Image (cartoon, rainbow, N blue to C red):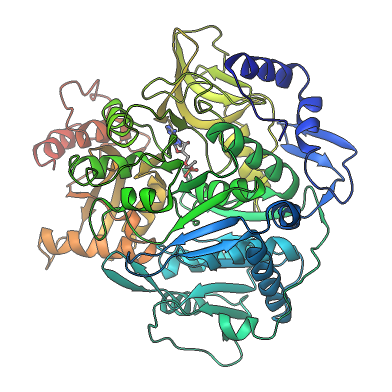
Length: 631
Ligand code: PRX
């Protein structure tokens, strides 16, 4: 496509154009898609309400741009290559034509189950091709999908179903993950005891695990599609109709439903995919994320498939059956672009280079990193041992809210620098502001990362609560979108992300709100109060450290710690389980009763040399006591 950038000077030119005349810049890119009716205005926005609309009054269906658009040019090309958990099980390849038929068939099945345009559908399913098929079928009929990571607990799933008042759940009987088989449908059944909006549940048979099927509510996937036609006329969607909701954690206790809409998301995910990864026809691209996160949405499903790419979907884990699995899959499918998270790289680095040795990895051209800052050591290991020193690393910074990659090198085109996300994508106008909201101009500055102009795939609202969207992203620094990240712009103008400046912890590239984990801990009947902070963790990037005041009567510390972990597991899921729990006699508080997290963060990270002034605390003595029993 004509919007591919081929050189550093090309990038500079495109960037300049995108800033001087954003409307023409994005109109040109959007023009290459199939619109049932062209837009009559490119963008209309203000960051006060906020109100952001792109390609106004344009009519389209994103799946026509994925399916019909590619049928004639490369209908037989693999769209999805699915690699199962067990290397001895056969992989599955779905061509664009096959994907088209499967999406149409499942679209018809969903309609037969009573799903209409605008209805919300929860997808709670592991990494199987049907996850992508279900997402695309929703998009085809205009239903709004909300994929919930299949590792979340029944209670977390119920919260999300209730928040968006979903009508259907699409799930599987179970999930193969490494050596384990995990029940999935049983979790849905438990969640549905706390919800009332769900009318039907479609269950894919994957593991053969025994499941309960509720009469009148539950139907097997294979029964639902039985006899359904392989053609389906795509619903006409407005650019600003909802495409999906994806729940993510913030600094308050309740996850928020980030809303993305059809037109802008389509244009940006595809544009960024092609440019960041420099995908060429014939390449096989593999992103190891889960479809339950934004990376899976934008860079396993939508971005690559909109670009007519071949996208690998992997059911398993990096260490099963051994720590060479990623590399075995790269060789097996001749992967050209490989995109993973720093936490996976660090976990594999810990096994040394031996698991890599049996593999050639000579098909690799580009390596990607996402989700958290990549430390220099991991960057070099990835570069030297996986990329054999010849593959550029694209360290891609973005968020659930941004929909697509906003800061990244363009593979082989713009320079890389270890631990730096480097430069903004065309169309992305970054600003660094100090805590008072003053823009810090020039290079060699550090501050809060904000964005001053909209980009097509930015969130439009938080579902059912627009005020929360305004408060969270547009009120800290008026006139700007605030990312929640700290950033450094170095002497060369390159951006390095320094991590969250709010109460969000990034655990293995997954976002966790400290308040959310505290709320879960506080559900335990013996817990009086808790405070959760992040601390540096060798593999996960950040670990979860919980300081907890407990009523110890009749309990040992060990049994209480285990019970608290189980409580968090039940309320949120295993990803939120604290790595360390310290039972404390009190929490350091200001005279107004606010917990001094700064002090707890220092103790958690083992850096107690300079605690700052603690004399103004309500209870300074407690600091010594916490320090002396720190984990
Ligand atoms: O702190 C940043 C970190 O992940 C946060 C967004 O998390 P989430 O919405 O779950 O999306 C993750 C996948 C896009 C950001 O606010 N983050 C993401 N990518 C990077 C990063 N931090 C440093 N470098 C990155 N490349």
